[in-house]
Image (cartoon, rainbow, N blue to C red; front, top):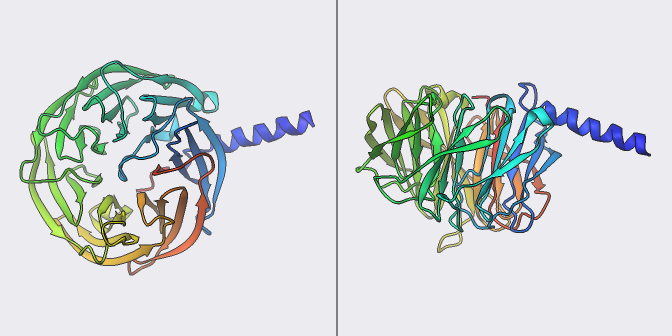
Length: 370
């Protein structure tokens, strides 16, 4: 029996260490538990949409159940060398290292930054050197250095000059030069120290958005805000030339959020997806909205709307990989859908999140196939 137990443990570790390979797709979930938070790693069957839990990463901290639907509270560096899980309840970030079989390295916090029930987001630079987080209680941004063992060293805290949306989504651009908040505040990143310089907020864009994504060349940012979508050019002096589209009515889909470029759109032309969180005064179901996107010239048009029958009519993060769409469905389910040629979705599988996931949770798909 002891031998069998050792073999099973080895199989789990070997399976998890494939995390980051190009051959296998994974879904990483921050379950946001108020009792024992963890990152759950699922292997994705790209043929059937089935998810298999292969590893649980206990953080030793807690979440807060209710987060903003577009918060992204987990981050993965290239080749999955380091994994980070935000604990909004205990105001820390838990770090895990591939070198140790993804055992926890530590929990990191600082007196200058703190989360509260409004949550926050975390994002790592593509080179794996720095991590940034938006903190709702202290109403600022924290910059962290990622060390070789995946531990974190605090760099500094920053307050957005343009507007006070401390719990806004934030994300690092693919070229690693900028960090942009959902409130359209853009920061430049010092490539040597990780320090931030605030380039200001786009005044023409009343974003305070529910999600953000970028094109591969880091020249276009897309923001989702209620029924309106904004595109803006990313420049060395800040965001410029905002354009807006009203894609839906509230009767069609309520609360547009969580933009996500398909691989084709990421490269300049193709499908751009949005989650619609649902709910609202009419208790509308959640949905995934598919649009046609072109970068040159910037243009957006509605292609399809697929209703998603979440248990509570609310959705969180979405992510696509190949012809699959993965959706965080409130309170504790992950839906996997096939993306059809007309932009509609066909459900393949639903997985109940393992562990105490009593509210909105966030997820990411890895490796990044875009």
